[in-house]
Amino acid sequence: MECHDAGATPPATLAEFTLGSGSTQDFYDVSLVDGYNLQMIVEVNGGSGNCVTTGCVDDLNRWCPTELRVDGGGGCRSACDAFGSPEYCCKGAFGTPETCRPTAYAQWSKHSSVNFMPSTILQAKPKAIVVT
Image (cartoon, rainbow, N blue to C red; front, side, top):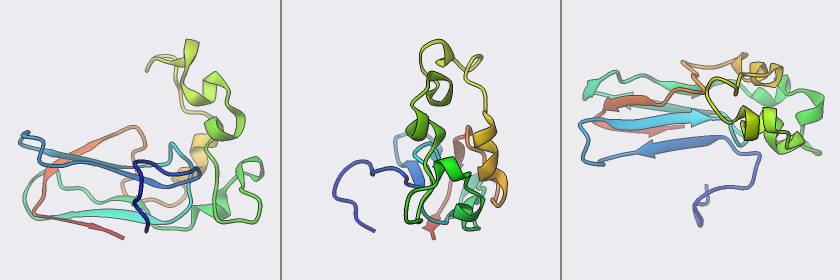
């Protein structure tokens, strides 16, 4: 894994963390907002709060719709990245929680997951976090 910059070139499976921010909880999630390129599990152990494992355990590339596939394999683009339309990017008239609704393309990511909640940021105060 290379971490030279803040961010990645899509498609990229994304893990997000806010740790030790002074809150009694840490925040974490696994997101496919930038597409999918590898399996990822975030496992939280010990501590307090709702320590829930989340992520994708299967190779989602095999479920990727043809129009989202990266040439040569190895990734599945998000509908926003592939089409750039406001309804897929939750922008403009689709920029509120009421108007930004899951599309058919969001369903492909649900084929194989562990507590995968694409719109939920999980909270816990774990003693250990393991990302695989």
